[in-house]
Length: 226
Image 1 (cartoon, one colour):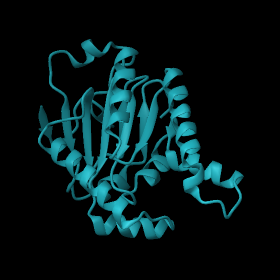
Image 2 (cartoon, rainbow, N blue to C red; image 1 turned 90 degrees about the vertical axis):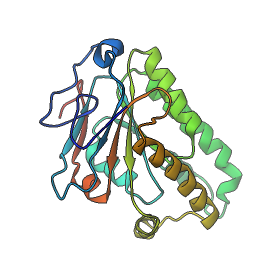
Image 3 (cartoon, rainbow, N blue to C red; image 1 turned 135 degrees about the horizontal axis):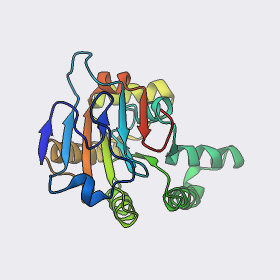
Image 4 (cartoon, one colour; image 1 turned 180 degrees about the horizontal axis):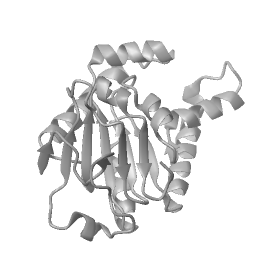
């Protein structure tokens, strides 16, 4: 595994060599190990965009309130899957006083059904990931490999204080217990990624701090318009 401070061809920054559309995974990766690109602490010199090959899957992970949804809404022009969107759609249809816990299982089924349909389409997909669902990342990796594509990780590294502030700004918070669980899961994922250990089936990772995430304006794929 290689830890790099600058762009590589595995999920390249704009200005670097672009990924080759339609090239099989084994040819694109060759015998090289997956690459971790660290874009943190770049003092304003972070790339404005990330570019991936046609049909690949990108998982955006980090603490609740770290800026995942904001980044996806601002930079992604392909289909994005976010469980919060599914929850919001169901909440608009349910009686206002009905507790979420009573229909949570239905929301989860609807979310994963939508994710399955997006993957089956063969189009590129960006997936919002809370960091605690390792089995989902495994599913995404297996599906990408079956289709001759690959999985990439974009990981937001922010402090717990910054994440809590982000939750207050968006008006949605999580309980102390849930946040502690997220911190443990994301902390493990971050430490592993920094050590060059990516989730199974993941071919590249990009580490972002709040500044680097804020400078990204586009996450594009070879078969979509920039």
